[in-house]
Length: 170
Image (cartoon, rainbow, N blue to C red; front, side, top):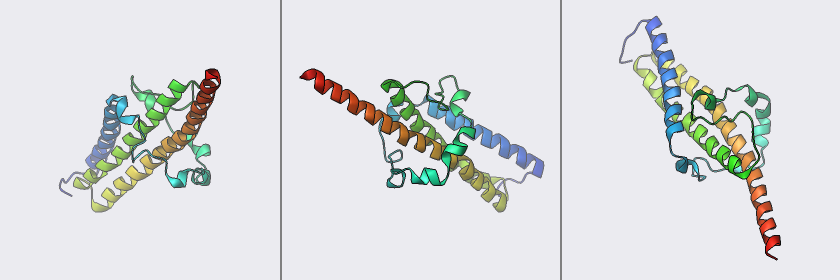
């Protein structure tokens, strides 16, 4: 602990720091160019453990994901991901892109947890780090779950469009 504060000021600083971190990183990610999220980079790529969906069934994500707040509602340029509002291919591509943006924001929100060791006791610093994990990992899983499902729909629509084009070429 580098900074010695009273328990009350430590709590105030912890709350203020977490709010600043979450909103600051989210705002920064909302402002990032869409081009950064167009591709399935290493971070966003579907993993083998996700392909059959059993991991998501095991953690019963369908039951609890609807309880999570939609961070897209906090910013003017935010994209709401609580519900699928359209089924056209452009909207679906944008939705997929926004799941990548949301996932990145939550990964980045874990990193600053190390700062809390500066003004918290080691045990409180561990609690702050655990908070960062416990708060962000469910949202990361929601983004990944939604993206895997959306990509299946996008791929089916793309296949259907290719078939229509082939038929119309004959």
